[in-house]
Image 1 (cartoon, rainbow, N blue to C red):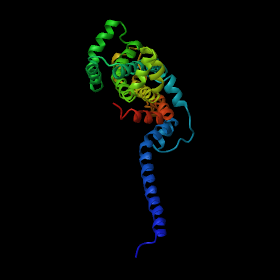
Image 2: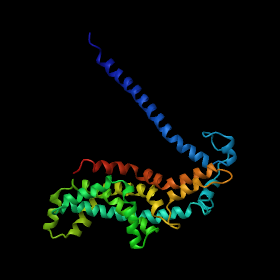
Image 3: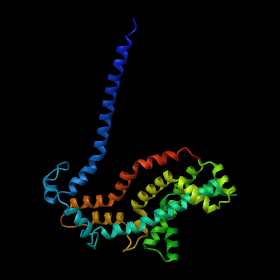
Image 4: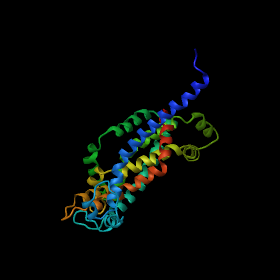
Length: 296
């Protein structure tokens, strides 16, 4: 005897319902697992040292205070200097903004030329640029330091900007090249027939169509440069150290009492810009990355 269609239809939603509940519970457990360190950092940064010593890692702050944040920003010692993270933070801002904009612009221009204005040897040039994506950063430390010294910008913010622009160009070129490969060639040919020049086509047609990959590249470059430690510690001077170097110096500065609340606040200050970018533009990052993933 065949089961009643009504009973079969009624049984399906129940099974799907339990499957969804199990899936949601599993996702919730994973989210709690990954968010626990962030919770510990935030709660510890809002506690006094007495609460930190007498409580547990997961205990809520009894009297939340931003004193640790204020000290991390203004008066925490980073080695022999006790000026907090503010100067390091500003160095990172002055370094990241031009480095991200310049490397993104150059990547867009390279991708445009390598897909829509190909020339003899363009594929070889792209292969050489692509090699830079997989080249270990440690390989370029010595030659780059020599170049910066010859240019007279060693141990300066301008030197760090140049380093990050050069290091980021292979990745940005790859992103834009793969994305522009999906743009129809007929669009460029029609613009040429109408008398549009190289720059007119790029600025008035290609760039307005590049919003998804622009968002991806800007976020990628921002997070990569902001979180970089190796270039920052090697190529910076006493007055040009980025936030990652300042955070490392703060955490490793020895004192009579280890202030874990200040360390946690400092780590959160260093992470806030990248957290903000991903929270605000994270969904656009995924969309843009997907848009360029199957091109080329």
